[in-house]
Image 1 (tube, rainbow, N blue to C red):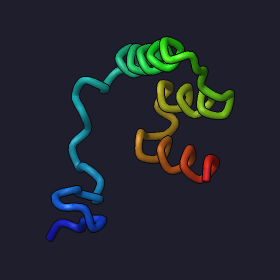
Image 2: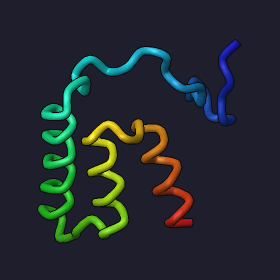
Image 3: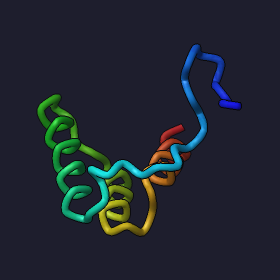
Image 4: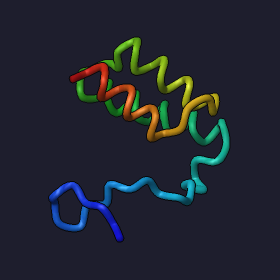
Length: 76
Protein backbone atom coordinates (compact mmCIF):
# COMPACT_ATOMS: atom_id res chain seq x y z
CA UNK A 1 0.00 0.00 0.00
CA UNK A 2 1.25 3.48 -0.85
CA UNK A 3 1.34 6.09 1.89
CA UNK A 4 0.26 9.57 0.95
CA UNK A 5 0.52 12.88 2.72
CA UNK A 6 -3.17 13.72 2.29
CA UNK A 7 -2.77 15.13 -1.19
CA UNK A 8 -4.27 13.04 -3.95
CA UNK A 9 -1.69 10.81 -5.57
CA UNK A 10 1.38 12.21 -3.83
CA UNK A 11 3.58 9.32 -2.80
CA UNK A 12 5.61 9.86 0.36
CA UNK A 13 7.49 6.55 0.25
CA UNK A 14 11.08 6.62 -0.98
CA UNK A 15 11.66 5.45 -4.51
CA UNK A 16 13.53 2.14 -4.43
CA UNK A 17 15.10 2.71 -7.83
CA UNK A 18 17.77 5.36 -8.16
CA UNK A 19 17.43 7.80 -11.00
CA UNK A 20 19.88 6.46 -13.61
CA UNK A 21 20.64 10.01 -14.73
CA UNK A 22 22.20 10.72 -11.35
CA UNK A 23 24.42 7.66 -11.07
CA UNK A 24 27.79 9.32 -11.46
CA UNK A 25 29.56 12.10 -9.63
CA UNK A 26 29.79 14.12 -12.85
CA UNK A 27 26.05 13.87 -13.42
CA UNK A 28 25.25 14.91 -9.85
CA UNK A 29 27.69 17.82 -10.16
CA UNK A 30 25.92 18.94 -13.34
CA UNK A 31 22.56 18.87 -11.53
CA UNK A 32 23.95 20.99 -8.68
CA UNK A 33 25.47 23.47 -11.13
CA UNK A 34 22.12 23.75 -12.91
CA UNK A 35 20.24 24.30 -9.64
CA UNK A 36 22.70 26.97 -8.53
CA UNK A 37 22.56 28.69 -11.91
CA UNK A 38 18.75 28.71 -11.86
CA UNK A 39 18.78 30.21 -8.37
CA UNK A 40 21.23 32.90 -9.47
CA UNK A 41 19.09 33.75 -12.50
CA UNK A 42 16.28 34.48 -10.05
CA UNK A 43 18.57 36.81 -8.10
CA UNK A 44 19.33 34.42 -5.26
CA UNK A 45 22.18 32.34 -3.98
CA UNK A 46 22.25 29.01 -2.17
CA UNK A 47 23.24 29.29 1.47
CA UNK A 48 26.63 27.98 2.52
CA UNK A 49 24.81 25.21 4.41
CA UNK A 50 22.86 24.18 1.29
CA UNK A 51 26.05 24.25 -0.78
CA UNK A 52 27.80 21.97 1.71
CA UNK A 53 24.91 19.50 1.53
CA UNK A 54 24.97 19.66 -2.26
CA UNK A 55 28.69 18.86 -2.24
CA UNK A 56 28.11 15.91 0.09
CA UNK A 57 25.48 14.61 -2.35
CA UNK A 58 27.78 15.10 -5.35
CA UNK A 59 30.50 13.14 -3.53
CA UNK A 60 28.02 10.34 -2.73
CA UNK A 61 28.28 10.78 1.05
CA UNK A 62 24.52 11.37 1.38
CA UNK A 63 21.60 10.56 -0.87
CA UNK A 64 19.09 13.03 -2.25
CA UNK A 65 16.48 12.17 0.39
CA UNK A 66 18.97 12.89 3.18
CA UNK A 67 19.96 16.18 1.54
CA UNK A 68 16.29 17.19 1.54
CA UNK A 69 15.73 16.11 5.15
CA UNK A 70 18.76 18.02 6.44
CA UNK A 71 17.88 21.11 4.47
CA UNK A 72 14.27 21.10 5.69
CA UNK A 73 15.34 20.63 9.31
CA UNK A 74 17.66 23.62 9.03
CA UNK A 75 15.18 25.94 7.31
CA UNK A 76 12.11 25.27 9.48
